[in-house]
View 1: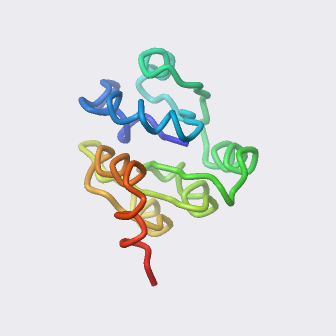
View 2 (view 1 turned 180 degrees about the vertical axis):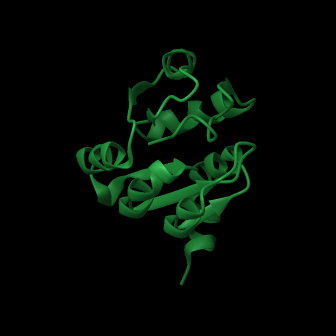
Length: 136
């Protein structure tokens, strides 16, 4: 489950490199965009990426999506306060530091913090790197 504003996009514009990385991820995982849609670009971004999308104005709605997908097998990537419940509930929560900033709550509730969404997607493409980060 991916947030859009501040995560996959900067002020409504899809970040370069996202589409290319999502292709191989979509071959292995179901990808859903769930966003508050602040810049009203969710439908266009979803169409460009070829993935399902829904609007979620608050964190409880995002948490319901995680529950529907199954907490134990869900990955959430986000940056906002409305991502906190989902980041914490998912099997893996990744907070992204982007140009639109990252809420302190997202940083506290995530399992992993990445400097960009591209780094977060790269972790999903290379499970060994993710395992090294999460090894106890």
